[in-house]
Image (cartoon, rainbow over all chains, first blue to last red; front, side, top):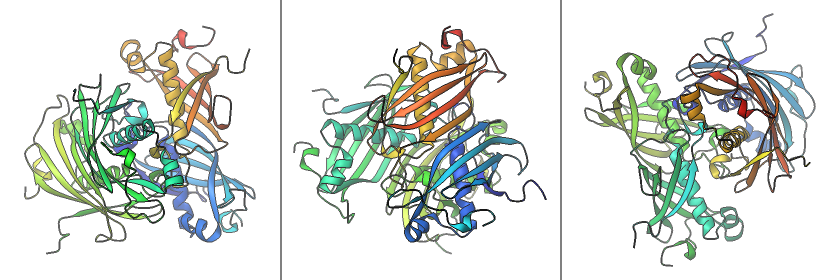
Length: 137
Length: 137
Length: 137
Length: 137
């Protein structure tokens, strides 16, 4: 079994909009790439977030993030953004997300731990995650 | 009467978030600065947009923009963003917006013509602007 | 010959990062999607902008934009962003860009005219566009 | 001695550009507000980052961030973004940053721990922080 067996990857191309005058990707933007990858991972499982709100009455909210920056991405880079659930409770899950540049193994640019809560779309109170989203459900 | 007599100005400081790897402000961001200045001009007249939606049932939507880029802004620049209504109808107004760097006269970095519609906040149909917002009301 | 014969299209997916609290895509962001499409059109012709700077000593700068907003895009929409040169001189070209939602014909959300200058990457003075980029070269 | 004795605060107004279709501030944007506050804190001490690069040959790079989201900010909110150094070594410092809404004490919206490295602007190797930036220097 490879280390990557459970990991979903989503490609992200870097445009000028992503960079800053330091010549590299602006560090807050990695949070956007991680979210794009989580959104596409959800879609790959058959979940659309606008339908989850409208039909299931649930939405997801980011509770905390921990980001470590290892190497900067630059204009025109083609990134591989990984998604994997590393911890799951009834009302929140934690994703381990890794961003690589050349392929899905190296070099490692940025790692993130993102904790997401599942909320009732009307009351904003914690609600159980749909079972199908959780590992080994 | 000076050319600037009717013009409201709002200061904008440039941070790394505003720049791109070309070393200057990313050109789409000037639209944000123009909107900050329109928002503060409204506030200076006593209008808060969240209250306009909640109490008056109206909101503003950008219908078109024309931007001309003359000189680029850079990290740490302190800009002066001007707001002036140049044309007003019942359901839309056009702003002339000029962005200067060192003071409110020069150098001129960017000019914009921004047409805004007033909409009913529920039906999204055109609605009359509040009289107090229009010149010579 | 169809109207679309010369038009290059690039897909853009809308994420939360793209929207604002009005519930639709923030209007300045359409400039980003138009640039992504121009960048990918250049790439499809064999041009990478970082190589153009490093090897040819040229870069592109946006001189003016005219945007008209017809219908708003929303979260999860999958857009089709068109690129076509409508006017070309020695040192600047104008792109006509149209953004559609469901397919490459309708509905039309936003149209843009974007004028780009070709500059010497060192002196920032106007420079001739590479011939291969121009129509009927 | 008050808890706030060493803390610098910078005000941030929320505009549409800051929000997302969930109706609140997009969570990646808090990193921008924290950086604006660090930049203004540096400026209050007499340091301009463009001059630090040009004259001292040093720049600052974000190495890691830990963010916890407590309550969301909304359109038109006026935030107070705090800056305080909580740990400092020779080549990196950690900031504790707290974002409040109504005043500089409550409600608490977001907390961040941001670790910044000082780098040589040419070689990008670690370099000592200017003494004047460190507490009890």
